[in-house]
Image 1 (cartoon, rainbow, N blue to C red):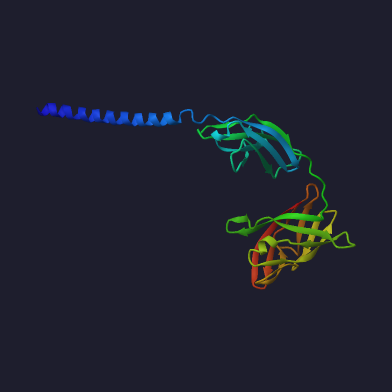
Image 2 (spheres, one colour):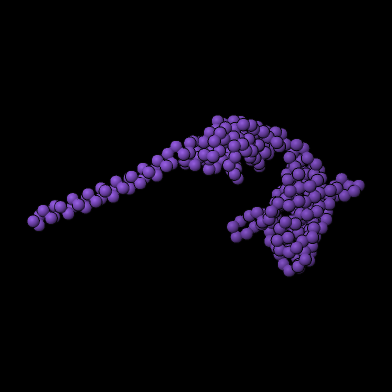
Amino acid sequence: MKKIFMFVMPCLVAALSLTSCNDTMDDKAVIDAQYEGRYSNAVVNVSSTNSPDFQTVEVTAAVANADAVAEQGIMLSSDASFETVTYAVNDTVEANYTLYVTGLQELTKYYVRAYAVGKNGVTVYSETKEVTTVAAPMVSIEGTYTVVDYKNGDSGWEQFCNPYKMTIEFEEGSNDIVNITGLALGSIDRYSETEPVTFQGLYDAETNTITIPNNSVVANTADYGQVWSVAYQADALVLNFNPKGGSMESQIVRYACAAGNLGYFYHEMQHD
């Protein structure tokens, strides 16, 4: 009797286990059936490509079934195999959308394709198209620039402020003295409410540089008064200008005020 009981108990356990597994499988089948065919693979294509300026590519794409898409965007690469890729992701999901990639090189061929991540988990890609950036224009050093400041911190050089505006104008009647307004304004304003001032530099047309003497007052702050520039291991701060495209970059500079040093910076500028 004991042997029969020992045989019956494992059989009951096995039967109960099979019943539980079957219930689980049935539940999964019911769930799968609810979603089966609900989301199809996305269908995506590139409608057009364009280079609105020498460092930017514009791509317009479309998806035929936007309701099946969880994410969409474009991919850009300098090689047809897309080994090195820059992504631009659309903030929303739309049937038609336009995205931009900037910071590119002039007169360079790029390869682009659109992608869509489906709600079913499948990512699809459009056919690859080519676009070549236009030539960079020759730009005068005068004008308005968009500036980004970088500060040397614990993790190295990091962007320290949002982009801001700076202007450069020739002193009236001069072709080498320039008036500069707004340099370092974005960074200094993080320490104290800042009023920009206009200070002067010397422009060399042969080398395309602007030289700013040390201790030039570049801003007035509400809390610390005047802020002045001191070039790193140099007698003057030099701005290097590239007239082809209008980019400019500064050497390393320390900004100081009566209360002490604000830190070491450098600036990247792009002519508007």
